[in-house]
Amino acid sequence: MRKLIVGGLVAALALTACSNGSGEPAADGSSPATTATDRTYDVSGVEQVDELAEQVPQEIRDRGKLIIGAAIDYAPAEFRAEDLQTAIGYDVDLGKALGRVLGLETEVSAAEFASLLPGIGTKYDIGISSFTITDERTASYNMIAYVEVGSSFAVKTGNPEGFDPDSLCGQSIAVQNGTWQHEDLDAKSKECTDAGEEAIDVLVYSSQSDVTTNVIGNKAVAFYADSTVSDYAVALTNGQLEVVGGVRDSAPQGIVVAQDDVELTKAIQGAMQHLMDDGTWQAIMESWGTEDAVLTTAELYPQA
Image (cartoon, rainbow, N blue to C red):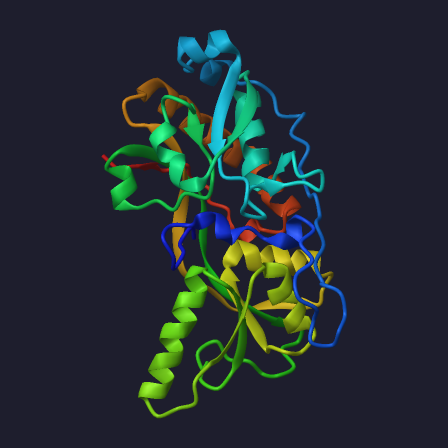
């Protein structure tokens, strides 16, 4: 979920685990448990579908390139590789795969998250940047669903402390500063104290790598994050973590297209459904360890 406590500064969701951030040491003095890992899926085998390629507006076909707006700060969906230049992530892989289906090269144009939507249809052909589908957004843009993301808790494998996601009072839980989950834990902690129970020990860190490391290092019994972030952390830590309690408060995210661009909307929706049907989208998400978020229908919002 692209949500934050403060002023829409969504870029604060960047995971320094994926940009060589040093962060704080673990509780046991060890180095951070996660490292930057490029799990890019090779989409070179994805073939053009002529019927869909013909639906692309002539201006884009003449250009030969699909320009995708994204905020490259949100692993594992879209972030920078170790060279701090190359955009990687499952959203980036998806953009490349869509381009191949439509017979187009792709270019990821990086910008701050808050500036992306105003540029759809002018500066960018489409936006793929973890946009949660909301009524407010679909009042002005078309959105094509491709993943469903919520929040989840992760613990050390085997849940040695017996952590119960439905019984948080008095528990030590790590969270990244400024995220929706940080806000939610603070609210839940107040509910605990209002009920006469012990407050949640909310351990706040500046990066997800620090959050993850301090669960592995036994300073916190669990962490709370976006479900795709949790799944990615599990994949990066080689079996040291597991998700407990399933996904909560899930909502679909969508590819954004200008509402008056009927041709491109139809082409992107068709290409997305094609990638779902032929297994490419599932394979991309499996590569990043986030397959639980996959949707199988490229539903268009707003719905007719």
